[in-house]
Amino acid sequence: MAHLEVHDLAVRYGSTVALDGASLSVSRGEVVGLLGPNGAGKTTLLDVVGGTAPASGGSILLDGENIAGLSADQRARRGIARTFQSVDLIPSLSVEDNVLLGCQARQRTGLFSDGLRLPRSRTAEVLARREVDHVLNWLEIAHLRDAVIGSLPLGTRRMVELARALCTQPTVLLLDEVGSGMEGDMLRRFSAMLPQFTEHGLAVLLIEHDVDFVLANCDFIYILGGGRVMARGTAAAISRSPLLHDIYLGRELSEPVAVG
Image 1: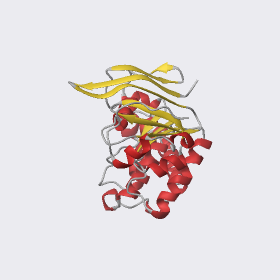
Image 2: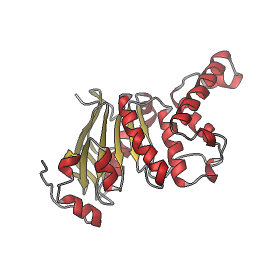
Image 3: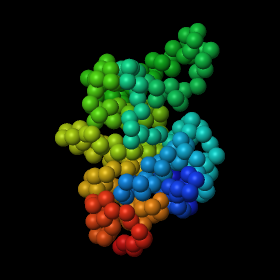
Image 4: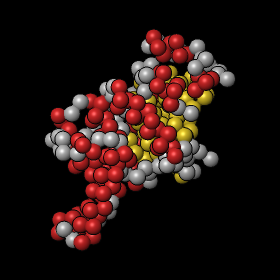
């Protein structure tokens, strides 16, 4: 059984169909990519899995448990972490403080304890700062810990958002265009991190518009079009799919294609 399973997911906004029976799965230790033109339903799928958008139908299973009725916070506590197409950080806070929010999201010391600075809360903060230090060093951005988010370029902010997601100690990482805005060494570092994530047992589901990046870094790939899965297969199989040419050109995908 896969760690994350999505079955027949449907999302409708009035007469608009955003997802039309999409299904996919991601196992621990696996990087799965989502490809498709703009409007294919890729971000909507991550929104629904993460709990920030409602589904009109279908099921979302995490280790066999249907989590479709849980809030985004409840899903996060069960191990689902998310980055966003539009970076979701607090611009006025430092890198370190933004990443600390990831630790606090999973801690339950309580507002009363936090407000009075009771020992349990102080101990949690010390441990959280150690964890933040470890993650910032892992992602090679520790030298920016005191930098204010609003002063940083897009690629660096995406790396900070990834650090915050990792500090929730997830089992599933939903990555929406993390590589967008990264260049050179930073993009190469992100690529090198993906195998490290899977070595730690994470299930990674990512969206990237860079088709070559997805083909080079994903174990399995789904192509979405019009809210439906149009093709699925290994990177080698998908690389031979005629749908790739349409994705490069930004064309709407019409009918599913078998790959193999």
